[in-house]
Image (cartoon, rainbow, N blue to C red; front, side, top):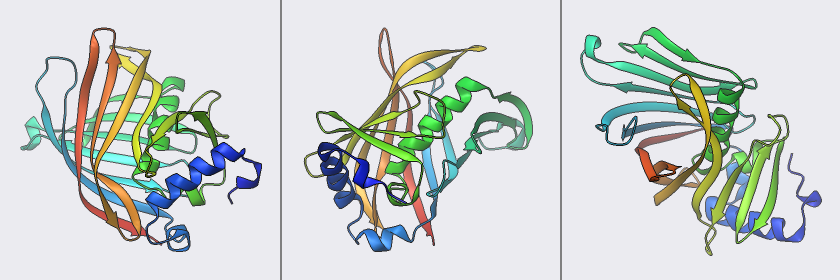
Length: 235
């Protein structure tokens, strides 16, 4: 249940503006959406200067609790393809690489992965905005300049994402300092995602295209470009 009565006036106003854009069909209809399934096509670049790799993916996002699963397939034939599972569930994150999309060859877990995957989930409210209405442990705070900070009170301390909201309420970008895998270690790095080409699906307005980048010392490195191909809301 929302706790908007505990929010300051500035946060309430910004949250209301954001909701008015996300729910063109009204909040009552959006509140019935308990999660979404999204299929995507896009491309991923592992490091600056590397080649772009096309993928197809399916993602499931829960609007009632911090939980998502993104499963992508890269490549064509079994022996030359690999899969990636990116997810967060029951307070734990995971990143798994699978040969042929089946055989696990690498798995990343631990506190830094937990934090990074929870931050990804919080940014996914741009893809599943009914999270704004149905997630009971989220906390929202205005940080000024039409920026809304969101965190899960049940998540690791200090784990949050900032969402920049335009004058019309549309989410312009989401930003955070996220753990970035560098070899066997992780480095806290400024991260940002931008949204483009908004479209209405089943009473929710979401972006059809998303680009994501790391802000490295030498400059911005865009590593993900994705486009929504289908969108299904669960009731």
